[in-house]
Amino acid sequence: METLNNTKLEKLLKQELNDDLIDELKKSNLIMPANTNMDDVDLKDINEEGILNKTPKINMELINQDNKLFIQLFTNENKFIKANLGSNLNIEIKLESLTKNLLHDSQINGIIINPKTDNFILSSEDYFKIFNITPPRFNPVKPATGTSELLKLMDDFDKKPDDINIKIAFLKQLKNSSFYLPTQIDCENHIKDELKNKGDFKLEKDTKNELILFPREDGELFLPAFTSQSEIEKTPLKNFFIVLEFTKLLEIFKSNKDSMKYFVINPSDNPYELSVDLLLEIFNDPNMIDKLNS
Image (cartoon, rainbow, N blue to C red; front, side, top):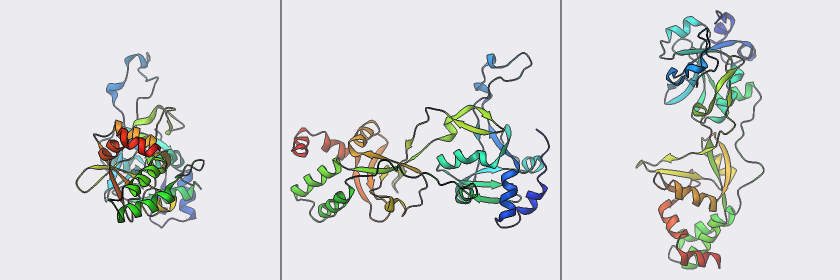
């Protein structure tokens, strides 16, 4: 790796984010610490000169600051060495090459440049503004459906939980509704085994969206579901959202019932919590199925 000279950038890092700093950030090369497990290297991928023909799996070395995870970058080798990291790889990158990581990994809150020295924090939101990126959050083709009627029935059911007619109406509407669900792409596990243009990660073609579970105070995990985009805006979530029908969710409940214990509708202001085990019991009951289909 050639010696980096980011003297101008290092001076600007002492200021608030401004046009000069943004311009310098865009054109600078930076060092990103990473790790690779050499045990995964196949000997057949090493040529006669001892050079790897195939780059092994790369994992970014994230930093935890105030219980938030950040990608860490360095402006030169000396600052990288002073950080005394346990990484076994350092990659020279352009800032813009991290777009996919910030878009698809909800656990990452932004970037810290020269942690422990300059400690300049560039939040994900500022990063997206710099590169004029609108983070995708919703599936524009397929909005959630049936939720307005469901919300009314939820309110009715709360007031009269013993009214069998309201209960049947509520369950029918639940069955026919779809919801916004937060997902994330696990970038660390799906980074392709190669790098292009000094560290621009390419995601595997078969990378899948994974639904995100959250812990309750008792440690049990729940799946949050939202009836509208406005309900999502009440939360700090910055994930990509997909829309799924409740009937498909039942299949997910069935295959994940050991870990997924609750289904919570609109968990921000007035959460409506339903037991996954109870939902599976209800919707697998032949008598209830007949009533719901009538």
